Amino acid sequence: MFLNLVSLAAKWAIPVILFTIVLLAFLRRVDVYEMFIRGAQEGFTTAIKTIPFLVAMFVAISVFRASGAMELFVRTVSPVTELFGIPAEVLPLGIMRPLSGGGALGITAELIKTYGPDSFIGRLASTLQGSTDTTFFVLTLYFGSVGVTRYRYAVISGLSADITGFIASVFICHLVFG
Amino acid sequence: MVNVIWVGMLLIGIIVAGINGNIEVVTTAALKGAQTAVDFALGLIAIMTFWLGVMKVAEAAGMIRLLSRLVKPVTTFLFPGVPKDHPAMGAIIMNLSANVLGLGNAATPMGLIAMKELQKLNMSDPRTASEAMCTFLALNTSCITIIPATIIGIRIKAGSANPTEIVGTTVFATAAAMTVAVIVDRIMRRIYGYRKWR
Image 1 (cartoon, rainbow over the protein chains, first blue to last red):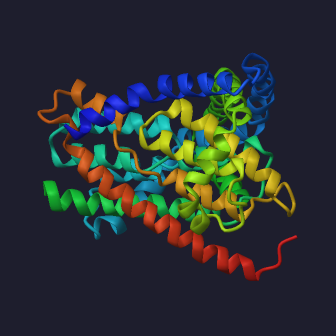
Image 2 (image 1 turned 30 degrees about the horizontal axis):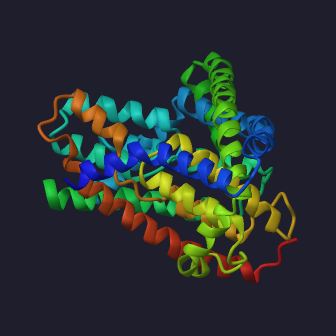
């Protein structure tokens, strides 16, 4: 019931927002068309400005993954994380999640296919996928769009959120599905 | 920090590839990564152009400021450095709402508009992140999604008996992540506040 309501809201949100903005602006005698064009002009430059930042980050992640360094890293830390009740199968997902959205989704789909969606691993992978974000990608994109190259402590707070999301997922899945 | 991570990933990647005897992978992977990045940015042109247009209309109608004023109690606490009815607040709230509803296509442009507004308020070096930017990104990357639509889709396709049963656990985990993100952001802001930043 609640979920249906939310998915209904998600479906209607953008059309309703568009309608309201345009109607209200028109009633307030804003030259809507003129304003839209003026704002839209910045779209191209904003998108293009992110290219060097995104290329830099994607190249490093891509090399790190394809070379096998990622796998090596996972194998090195998995004995430690297993002590905390984190199954070795989902660790690659936890490490991939902040780096690459597509990569993480691939691992999740693979885990669900191998272990089944209603297995413990399948449920944990699903929870992990939904509860953490592609932190490095978001930082690169958002900072890149305004030309910021010194992220200060944004990486630390973003990663601590990811690690918390990971640990909290393992904890709650053990509790609910375990 | 990001400098060290970037250099580390690249150098370690090249060394491991060399040791594993598949050094040729490096060049292909690098170019493939670059291609993915450019493809994404090109896709962004359409979404950004559309939403920047819509947001300009909303701003001209005074709606962004109105929205900023409505959420003042929360934002005063989270963003003490940003003026109360600044358009950045409106964009931040719209970005977070879109994130919660899982509307990725709308969330990204709203977020980039928010960054642009925050950059106008960035009094220090424009190449260095401001405190408000760090707080916004901490919120953004840890934000709750009520409907993890993609993963539910995968579960349905895999023949799950109850595809949405992971919603509760997901909300719990994101809530924990978001709480920690806000706390860490506060602590780091203190620590970095003591250091002198040009």
